[in-house]
Length: 636
Image (tube, helix red, strand yellow):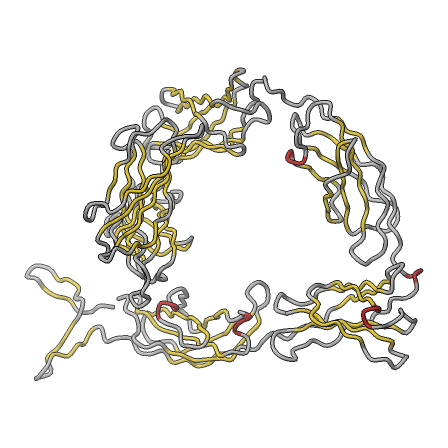
């Protein structure tokens, strides 16, 4: 708490620092600085699940309002930047140390305090260390050995009772009554193995043969105990052959080339999996689909039936199968005949699209998403109408927006340049050269809260990025995210529409988003802003890439404009771009080199309709060395 204030003649203001004179010099009395944390204990612990091994560290809390930042590093104490990701307000934290390349090595764990009132960091990092002990492997269970008919081999399988923290298995087999030594197979990578006695100069199995397996962990001589033994036994003890299945049921999904196949389990022993085969009646069965047990239907996608037309005949059959080495599979079922029917024809109008979502895209635009019609490809365009409950109707033609799957239009210009939410009705009709399909209708309540726009980068250093955006009406605050994690909270109007994100990793790509906060609501995330931090000063790397913003229809409808951020150490910039149209052609590839002085903007030439421009920029230093190129930016 700051108890020191300054009087300016009319009001008192909080002081940033306070000093007193001791008779000879000025002595700083506030803030006093943050003492070094006293670490009490550290121990390794296995918490299981996806986390695995952690170091639990405990320290003595300081008096006052502090949080504590903890991190770990192998071979050397962690730096302050490596401690920022973990924030604790108590006196205990868990740090992940379960990396396989850390087993048997010394890992240093650091703790530093930060003053919650002033944001000041402690000057000294408290450090302790721990030697990471590798996990103890667990013996496998469920070992099974079955004879392979017609060979001198046995098929072995067992159950994994360990986590991913192991390196393999050792398998042994031998005549335990005949006095012969164990025959060992090393470095087995999976939980199945074909033990061929001929590899060891043996002539086959006897009744006293046994097998066993153990798990190998990390490190030297880090093994589990041996599993319970298993014997192959005579042929009559091998798992029974599975029964023959009835013909499957085959049906077409709507007017598509998708086919749904269903079946019933075979009589007798339960299978471990199913094998589905299909093909044209005059060709071989292909491909083969392996389906887990417990699944009694499967939908085959259109891509599996290239060139299929109405009246084409296909054959389908199903087979019950065991797991590898567990007996003979059942025979395939009799084949089922199937004819495609009523498939769409080339000269047919499209079907009805399926509208899935209508949401706000920007302050004045809406975003519409839909599924393409089930038939009638080669769409020329979509005809769309938009009507607000209390406004006029607007008609739009959405050209070239079918991408073969879920389709969307992200900048629907609304009738009244919507600035508040409301109830909207939208209709959508697919059209091609043969006519218009049936119309789809969709209603939605659109939120009045829109995401921040015009996200851009300001100053970029090796460990920080300044993020800027345009103000959002009625917003009370903004939340800034980096790579999906919140990194800042900016009240309005205290800090306005910019925030500096610090403690970033040098020479690394980061993706930023901003969310507007309202009373009782939040907006969706803004468009993503990719930025690469500069190299650390001592790394000697090339100049970092600038952050590029590409705008279409500026300064005219058939032009484009690129602008970018400045890069420390740059004396010039280079720009390259390509232009292509869906029909082919376009402006091709261009490179503008050695732009005059420190220019931060370039305007492109006249473009063809529907031409896509891709642009990149690189910085150049005084020696003519070219830095890294920016991430590609696109505009149509």
